[in-house]
Length: 253
Image (cartoon, rainbow, N blue to C red; front, side):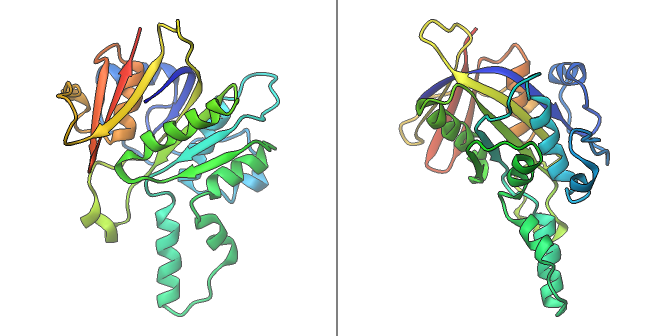
């Protein structure tokens, strides 16, 4: 079990480009739709040109969570279940067709590419991780963030982002897959912190009965359901069954 606080957040999805739009969405959630892309004006144009749509979403919310006047040396955890899988598919298709592979495209297809692009563009020399853990990707990211906090980091930023799977992988889709990204500013929870969060896990065979998540979140991918969990006043508990483990999120205060 780990405890932490969320000091701030930023999020972006098609049609949800402001804090107020996200707060409104949390009261009546729906799958984001559209082909909009964030402007990402924080990144120089020459670097911005190399960043695909999914990467722009992730880097945009990371930039929005930066604090005015800070030296951007904050540990980062980037988490995406599938990453930029479309770029990988394009490389495989080129390989099948006997076409030469672009070293740049290959370098940008690896799972930590978005984190690396952000750290270079923002000159962030702090530790960063790139996480993929199936359905429990967000949970794994928060456990990693709490480990960094336990090692002495005063704050860790968790960036969660995902996109639509290519048609060739449609048979493996387990949940809706809109484009979205969010960033949380995660800090240690103090003993008297009435607004602390708790993330616990236990074997599914011994897990106690858990409250069902709100029905409005049923049609959301897990990452977006957790964003709504942050913003909406209820429920106070959210559960995820992931194979042999049951994860339980509890928000206090």
